[in-house]
Image (tube, rainbow, N blue to C red; front, top):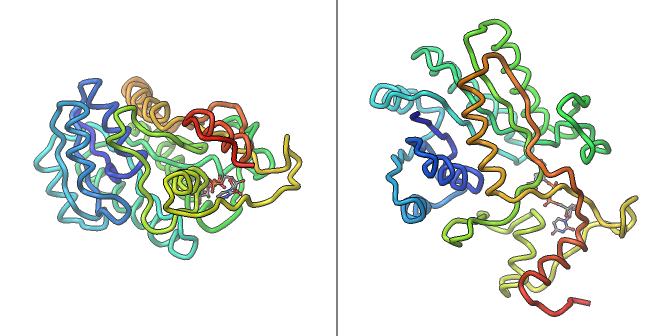
Length: 278
Ligand SMILES: O=c1ccn([C@@H]2O[C@H](COP(=O)(O)OP(=O)(O)O[C@H]3O[C@H](CO)[C@@H](O)[C@H](O)[C@H]3O)[C@@H](O)[C@H]2O)c(=O)[nH]1
């Protein structure tokens, strides 16, 4: 299959492309490099010994999309563009999703995988959420994701020829074993794992632990961390599922196991042979 991965040079995208290429799929990446670097392409090709087509461009660029669909026989689209800044999420996320779906309709490509988030579950219930748990938005970013999910469900029920999968990510961490691709946040990281690695590599002097009185094993926040390579495998399996199933389907990508901030720090120290911080 030929799969267009929009947002493919990012953290989740790059690991997903490696998995897809290793399985023999053809991949085209469209990315505007707003939160990733072009050298990811070389690394992907080194890891897989396969060629990947890269187009630097924005999903809002009609001509660019038209060109891709004209030049390549695209079988499915994986959409990973994700603007998390709350202020801009509505406009960027919704416009981007609408634009790619419109472009796909025009060329009759109707297989779509959407990278959503487990944050769409009620905050307190996130850790035990199943795909049928109730949904709600804690902030405009999550609301933008939920609105796109709703749009996809509507699309599939209006036109049964669509095959759509919504993947709800828990917290991806880790890197490809080659070390050639990994999470490289632009600017100062806000997520826990990049902050830990910055302290470990002396790029930052201390790790701030946010909160110590949550109702958890040690009072610090608990999340379901999933290895990014497992998450990537989830996308490849979603592609297989898309071929056999029409309609819109949601899947959680997590492990079902919670880890607190302090437990994650301790696991990092143990894995890297770092003496205990305390
Ligand atoms: O320097 C840090 C960073 C995080 N945390 C804690 O670590 C846990 C995990 O935080 P984080 O890695 O930011 O994940 P989430 O809070 O689950 O946030 C996820 O979901 C957010 C909303 O979708 C996105 O904005 C983030 O990028 C994404 O990681 C939480 O308890 C945080 O309070 C710290 O203690 N110190």
